[in-house]
Length: 214
Image (cartoon, rainbow, N blue to C red; front, side):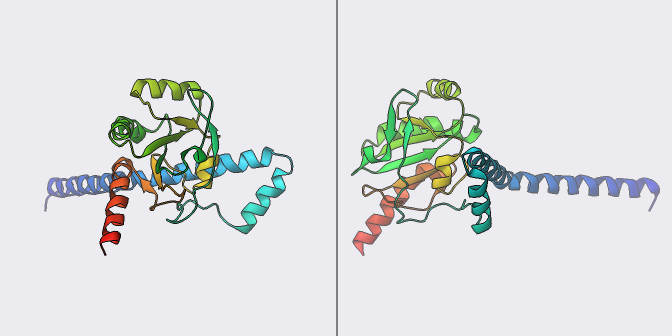
């Protein structure tokens, strides 16, 4: 084979490897972003705890005992209670929805997939009056208000401090959601991503119907 032929083969081999590498990089991108968000959440939470009186010891004890859970809460768990400030004023508590199912969605104003989900979630909220939608966001209040106005959201949006409530719900990522039943329990595994979130209520309803039929 001539030098030109060898160069041609090597060039195409390099291009093929490059394409393969890019494909696998994109494939891993979503999971990598979740890990980065989880690491950011860990650091923010530990920094906040360390700043509290006696916080350094508390952080040390936390690290010594176990890693922070980020795998989500299992079905059947009592949903962690919370009271958080609403973007439109006042406060909202999970207990306000006692006796009603709630789709609790965790979002972020800088999350691209959250922007895609928001209008679909608004449509779902209007078309499903039997289920309340509550969004938990984070970050700057004014930036969040701008996002809510831009997306035309009418369901309640509350702000958590850093990742504090996300830690209680054991998932540091956005968008994710939990379906909380009328008794205040987690009804299904945490849904990650827009499609999974929108399918969550239907999935749970179908499973309940199948259980009742059997």
